[in-house]
Image (cartoon, rainbow, N blue to C red; front, side, top):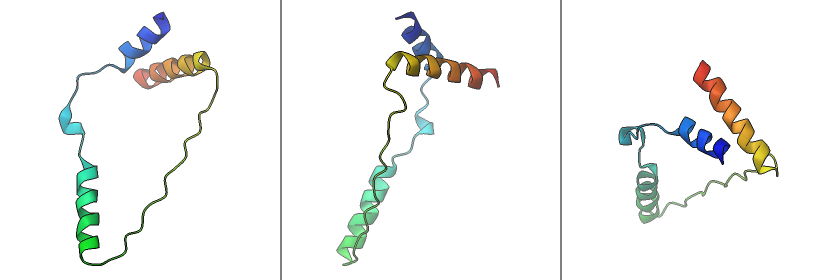
Amino acid sequence: MDMANKLVEQLTEKFNITKYKDSYTSKLLKIIKEKSKGKKISIPKMKVVHKQNDNLMDMLKASLSTKKIKSAK
């Protein structure tokens, strides 16, 4: 539990909404406009993400060490 708390503390930062942009709405409107003009829409294929390890503890430890390395730079 301590390790999980450390991970949350390391990843916690002040929320800045200006860092985020709603790209979904703009892409959706573009698709709607193109379809209304009769154009055929190509749907991008989704990427399959495979988990790296079945051991949750190993993944947690690795993520803690990765954050420490990034913080030190």
